[in-house]
Image (cartoon, rainbow, N blue to C red; front, side, top):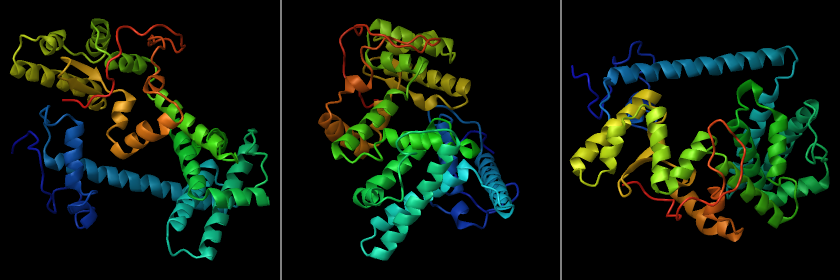
Length: 377
């Protein structure tokens, strides 16, 4: 049997080691959660088609079967723990209170988006949301945190009126705060109510001025974008948006020193006298090395910039551009409305960061700024 991934697969019962899910159409069918979809995705994450993947379809199937089984075990363990604590009359902790808040906010959004929802259904969803928020507020206080939200009277008519008037915005702010806390590493049983309460204040959850809420929300998004690439990744991003010899050299040094890429291959890619066939071979070598050194995790972080003859890092706004609707909404409407520029998001003019330092300082950007968002060739 061919040991190299052929580019596609076709699952049939008996192809997994244990056959736990072979008869499940979600697993064996052609939907988005099927094992063949997973095999295609996993092969591409490993570098296919640029890199030859020395795996067969049955090996992908075995991994998917194991992943589902392990995830099920983790969910069951959580439910056992949750139920046991409830039976013992103990509080189930921040992870449970935050989970209930997330469920309540999602339910509120669903009800508010349903054209035929009755006033009673809207009132019930609103009260579920407020009740879940009250638990989070109480836990944040227990954790020693204090801000305007922990001191707010959630039973007051003013707050109830705020939830009604904000509608879907309130639910969206709650989900965004939860996601931000999770992105900062506050996940699982360590998920902290006080962190979510803190993020809610940053998002203007209790502010009554619509312009101030909009400004805070936009500022929060900008801050998350600015901090997506930090430390050495900030340096890579800054040096991938412009293409002076110094910019290219700094990125190449990272590729060679950290990921083990050949300087010869990088030189071939940049050499205008080389044929495109020679360059494509060098590009394939570079991405194969990146995939092997990082075990596939850094493969999607870099692109071949054919126009500028280099391999470069993908800055955060270029990644966001892959989500066209969101990208256009922010870049064409929201950011211009609040006079936020692309240079500000990219921290242009900030000091190039030393991987061992985290401080900031100002200096004149090196060279003429070129277009920083470019669809890779």
